[in-house]
Amino acid sequence: MLDIWFQTFAAALGSMAFGIVYNVKRKRLLTVALGGGMGWFLYCIFFWISGSGFISNMGASMFATGYSELMARKRKAPAVVFLLPCLIPLVPGGGLYYSMSYAVLKDFSQCNAYAVSTGEAAFGIAAGIIMVSAAVRFICLRCVK
Image (cartoon, rainbow, N blue to C red; front, side, top):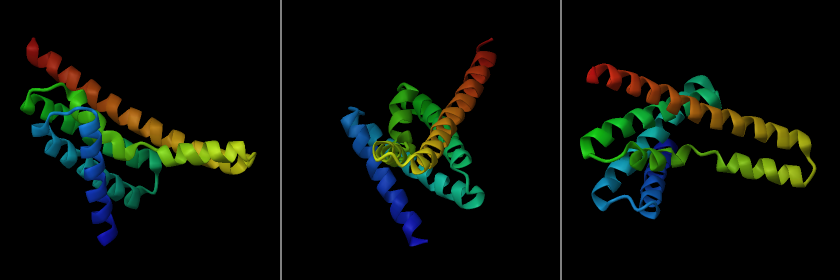
């Protein structure tokens, strides 16, 4: 259980570091770190429950998108300022690296396994963002009329 807390803390620091590189204003960095840490924590919980990379990434990215939309309105900034750093812990960079590494080594069975899991993660992130963004746009359009 200690491992999940350490991972959550590391994800929060990673999101904050990406926020610094991305030139997020200092007053918003804590918000970005909190979103990235909570998103990773939810990813771990979803993965523990489902065992699916797609479902875990989709659930965590749904949270990150909703959190970013909420913070955008509260902190008076574009949602992308919060969304990109919050999603950084979910990006399947390791899977992509190993997939390409095994492709270069011509071990196509391992390459395929990593490529499939990386694709599932990427599609899960995209699906979560699309579902929440569409729901927010739909709700906002109904509120304006």
